Amino acid sequence: AAVERYGFIWVWPGDRENADPALIHHLEWAVSDEWAYGGGLFHIQCDYRLMIDNLMDLTHETYVHASSIGQKEIDEAAPVTTVEGEEVVTARHMENIMPPPFWQMALRGNNLADDVPVDRWQICRFTPPSHVLIEVGVAHAGKGGYDAPKEFKASSIVVDFITPETDTSIWYFWGMARNFNPADEALTASIREGQGKIFTEDLEMLERQQQNLLKHPHRNLLKLNIDAGGVQSRKILERLIAAEQAGPGEQIPVMATK
Image (cartoon, rainbow, N blue to C red; front, side, top):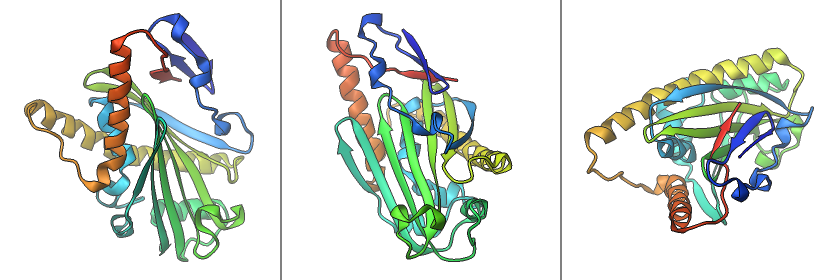
């Protein structure tokens, strides 16, 4: 079964009668004129779960994306992971820090000063089977952080839809939705270009990870405290896969295409 919604095609590869379009989350940014969206598509040679691991722990930004969104304060702010039903949420908040280059651009795009301290947040939300939406943003320090009024912040939703192709390859639909200056097409293009460069850096890292795993199939992945988001996401996937293999039941859409 397949359903077209929000500009994507959602596919259930199992029995048609078990497909339930109600399981597709509402995506306000895809239907509202108050939001702008820009994104792209990558073909990546890696297990889809490696991409989920990558997105649910953004500590790597400090090192892999040092010239754009990375900064040492990410390492210094401990993430907090919670599980809410079949949703995993990993949140990290940083206070009174200087914005990195990408967020300086975003602040300017919302007509805000880019050379003052900010409060920054990253809230990663995984829902099965392979969707991660990340609330990200910065607000001028002391204005309320995540809850700051729009006139003091630049915030967005990073969109990550992962379609498994084989055991070691995926189609990765990426993008960013924002609700400030949505009519500014030049800003949308600049953000898309910057985000595309960032995800290209992830691509190389993930493919090398996959190559190492194939060379050493008997080695287990090392799990650190910062990996809690990815670990909990994998547990949900393992439970759902086991239930599906045990017999008939509710199915969830496993692929999105655009």
